[in-house]
Amino acid sequence: MFSKVLIANRGEIALRILRACRELGIRTAVVYSTADADSAAVRLADEAVRIGPSASRRSYLNAAAVVEAARKVGAEAVHPGYGFLSEDADFAEICADNGLTFVGPPPHVMSVLADKSSARALMSRAGLPLAPGAVQPVPTAVEAAAVAAEVGYPVIIKAAAGGGGRGMAVVRTPADLPRAYARTRAAAQAAFGDDRVYVERYLTDARHVEVQLLCDPHGNGVHLGTRDCSVQRRHQKLVEEAPAPALSPATLDAIASTALRGALDVGFTGAGTVEFLVDAEERFHFLEINCRIQVEHPVTEMITGIDLVHEQFHIAAGTPLRWRQDDIRFTGVGIECRVNVEDPDRGFAPTPGRLDRFVPPGGPFTRVDTHGHAGYLVGPHYDSLLAKVAVWAPDRDLALSRLDRALSEFEISGPGMRTTIPFVRRVLDDAEFRKGRHSTGLVDRLIAGPKPTYPRRKR
Image 1 (cartoon, rainbow, N blue to C red):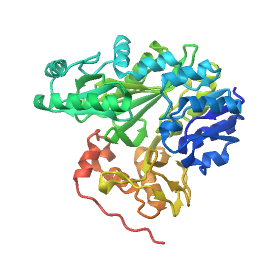
Image 2: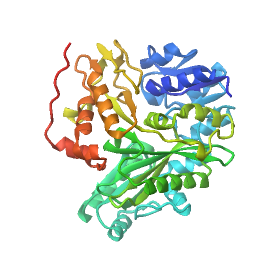
Image 3: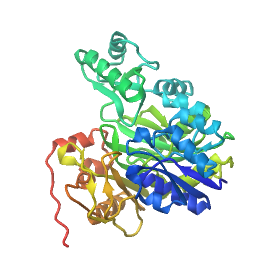
C-alpha cells in the first residue's frame, strides 16, 4: 500500500478520499487554489500545496502544477477524484513518466474509452448492444442527415470527446439537423478542442441505468450492481438510487454481466461505471464508460458494504481484487440526492455566497458528504455541488420517506442563497417516480408543471 497520496481535487470528493486514506494509514497531501485556501480538505490533510489562482485551468486543471506538487511532497500516488483531470489520459501518462501511480485505469485504456466514438466501436465488438446510429464520427452534415434518415427521428448529435453533459443536441426534424450539427461541432471544439461528432437514435422515455465495476490488472473483475440515474437536467444527475427500480431481475442481471464483460474485454482496471439507456421494453443500449469514481458511489456502498475508494487504492497498489462475484451481497435500497447551490425557479442558476447557517441532517442510515459549514464561502469558480445526502433502508418506500425526512431537516441559508432541495422533494413526491416508472424526461415535466409548497420549519 502507498505511504503518501496526493489528492488532486477539491470539495466533498477531496474529503472523501482523504478520509479513506486516513482509515488505510496513508498520509495525505492536497492541492488547492487560492479560492480554497480555507477549505476543510486543506485543514484536515497532512500537507497542502497551493497550485494556482481560483481559475481551474490555472490550478486544478494544471497537470504540470499537480505533478510538481506530488513530487514536492514525496507522494507515491495521485488520486484525481472525479471531474478535473480524472479522465485525462495525458495526465495519467505524465504521472507514470514521473514515477507516480495514477489511481485509475492505464493511460491507453482511458484514451480509447474517453473518446465516445471509439468506446462505442470497442463495445460493439465486445457484443454490447448500441442504440441505432453511427459507430464512427460523421464528418459532414450531409452524412449526419443520412444516418438520421436511416435510424429515424428524433436523433441526438454527440461530441466524440464529450463529457459532463456537454456537447449534445437532440434533433427532432430533418429541417433542424444542419443547424444543430453545426452548433454541436462548434460547441465540441470550444469545450474539448475536438469537433468530431456522431449521430444515434434518441431514445425517448428511456431510463439511465449504470453498473458499478471493480477490475484489477490481473484480469479479475466484479460488478456491484446497478444504479438508476434517470432524474437529470441537461444530462446532469440530481437523484440516484441502487439498485435500479422496477426492472426485472433478469434485466438487471443481464445489464450487469454485459457491462462487466465489456470492461474486461478492453482491459479496464480500477473502479469504473458502464452506462446504458433502457427503453420501455427493457432493451438496454450502451452509452459510455466512466473511468473514475462517480459522484453517486455512496448508494452502491450502502447496498454492498464495500468501500469503493478503499478498493481503488488496493487495485492501484497492485493487490489482486479482494472480491469474487459470489462474495457480493446486495441488501436494501440506497438513494442519494445532490444538493446544489442553485435556484430551480431561475433555470437552476448558481447562487454563490456565504453560508450563514449550515446544519446537515442526521438520523439512522443517513449519510451526508459535504465540504460545507457555517461561514463557508461558496464561490462562483467551480461546480455548484455543496452536499450529497444519501440514505439506506430495507425497501424503497422507506428509503424515499427517509430521504424526504432528511431533506426537510437540512438547514442552509445565506444572503441570496438557494438550493435544489425543494425541487428534489418535488421529485420524491412525484407519482411516477415513486412507482419507479420515471424516465429521463421527468425533470422537464416537473419544471413545466405547478410548483407545490412545503410548510416552513419552526425555529
